Amino acid sequence: MKYANGNEYTGEWVADKMAGQGIYTWQDGRKYEGEFKDGSFAGQGVYTWPDGRHYVGGFQNDRFSGHGVYTWSDGRRYEGGFQDDKFVGQGVYIWPDGQRYEGEFINDERSGKGIISWSDGRRYEMMRSESRGDCSYNVDLCNRTRVIK
Image (cartoon, rainbow, N blue to C red; front, top):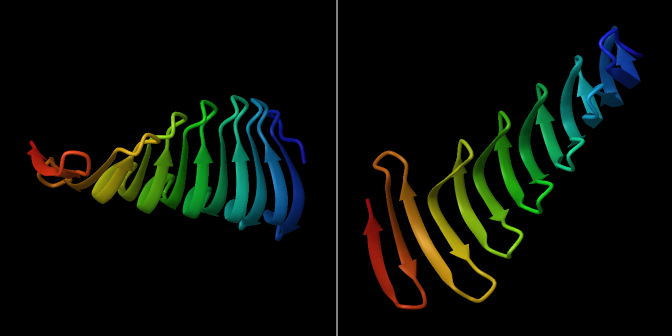
């Protein structure tokens, strides 16, 4: 079905709503391919942008939800939990240069316990407290602990 605004849906329908498997394409080049329920993205799917970004994973009510992988066009990547389009729970954020953070996220931010590591072997173990804004970390290379406020 082609809409007046240029967007298009191809797929299954139930009770005049998008349901089951389908593809929704926006006139600006964005595309969702996957499962629909009651007219919304629900279940597993792939969302792509014209600039090369893409998300593969779970959806609920048109939002990233559950486990997924979000990849930016510059090579950055996040794999882990999502809720309402935000990083939550356990996840891994990887930069193109090999640096990575593996740990806890709340609302797209590193929070709680995590490990930052580099391809040259450096590694920081950290604990971040959102309520106080503090961050403590252990540096494997110099064997000391610091608290940053």
